[in-house]
Length: 362
Image 1 (cartoon, one colour):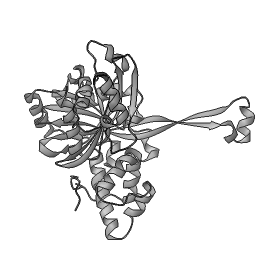
Image 2 (cartoon, one colour):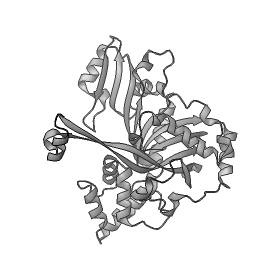
Image 3 (cartoon, one colour):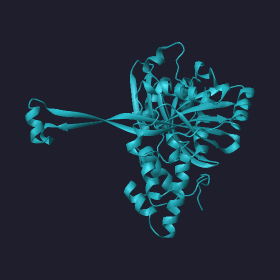
Image 4 (cartoon, one colour):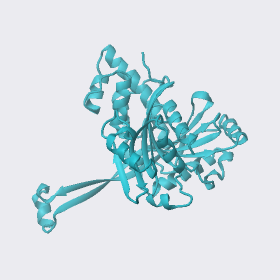
């Protein structure tokens, strides 16, 4: 029996090749591998092995297919996200939930194959503005609004001179290497999650690693503005600063039972800057001998500006990773700020629990 709290898919199973292809474009293999291990399914060497296992006409093949359908359904609202958090009063949250009951989702370019992404030929001409495609009921009365949009990033490749064909060498005879950029379009599934009982909303930007450093700050406002077209009580929310998560870094590090610290960047009381990262998945940086000795020598006083923490949750079972990364100049500020974090998880329950841990320490 599956021990992952995935909901049953609400739609008929999607063609398995299309499903794996869609997952491959939006989910890291690291996250997929962790989930396969947790499900006690064969991991294989990568996506091609996964497709091979899932297309078997055996009971194992059926298990893979059920898992992938559930995993994909969950990935629409989880996966790799950049998250900003807004606390709202109860009346506003109640109004949002009430209005969603009568909200109408208009058909768009994305609906023809939703929840799958539209094909590569069509995506470049699809709307770049966030478009509401689904309103999904989650656990504990929470609600997710899913907004699709077409985005792009530059795929950069570098070729040494010796790798170039002869006609290119003749054209660019004086160069040492050639750098190319190719624009890659993809479909983003951004979400706004309404946590009814916690009286907050989370604005979650999909696949943030594909966004430029400048756009990651503006995308949450674009999604909020799109949501405000459907929900009047979200009008003006974007003008309010999101929750300041900066205090969470030092506070979570100080609690040795709070997840596993995988990386840390900090300034010491002696004026040096340190960046440390664990290569083993089973060791907490707090317990690593070199780091532990150094912290003891400094009286366990330091000023962190980046941290990555893993959690393994038991009730319900799941795994999540959170990274908080501020500009180094913030540690010298009287009021250091950080208005978002990066969250990676395969399930909504683990996703929510990880954010709860961060919020606990602000």
